[in-house]
Image (cartoon, rainbow, N blue to C red; front, side, top):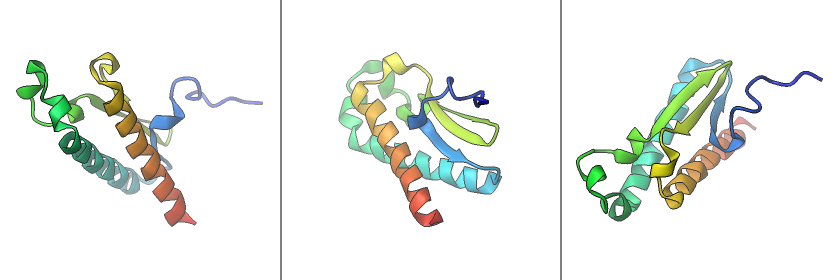
Length: 107
């Protein structure tokens, strides 16, 4: 059985989109970005507790990278150790809920 090359590189928790429609992919990434902004607002008290983050607008957004390869769009954390676990978990939950919504609307 052939194994997909990205199978060991990506966590399934961070897959935003699978397909070949660039417009749909961008729409999902924009939706995810909006959810990240909401997380930033909800946890601003936590983000603003350190001096390094006060000077950067949308600090959480700066901690996320997007990667697209072979029809799969994922997000990754740049410096995972800098993010409190609660923020990482909120980002992963936002991603999972987007994927779930895609499945619901596709059926």
